[in-house]
Image 1 (cartoon, helix red, strand yellow):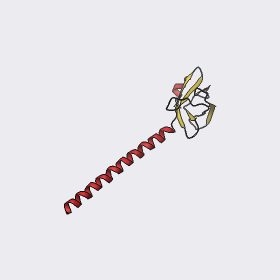
Image 2 (cartoon, rainbow, N blue to C red):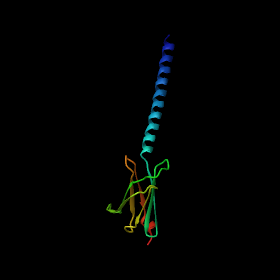
Image 3 (cartoon, helix red, strand yellow):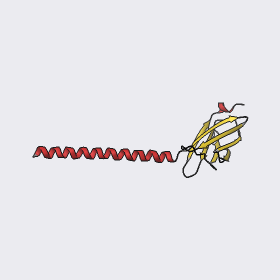
Image 4 (cartoon, rainbow, N blue to C red):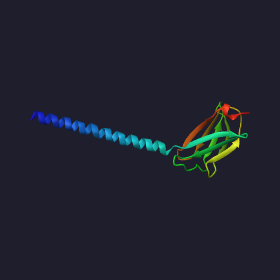
Length: 122
């Protein structure tokens, strides 16, 4: 009888441990989806004295009317703008420096892109 009781306790412990593992896996997946839901992509490049940015969501939809802010290496805002219906924003190079370009696409969708001084050219 004791052996049966011991086996039952072991079986119950295994079930509880497996249930906890499954629960943690499901919660972890939910957290990843939540983090992904607030992601937005931004890319920037320089051409002809202008900085071009492109911003879009993970599903490929462009960020329309997203706020673009540009900060120099001393954390001073040097430019800003809004994305168009295609998720693009163009502005003159404000200065030759490492520039951090932020996108705020509302509802917690934010990201940044570092445009290095060496990429800006002359």
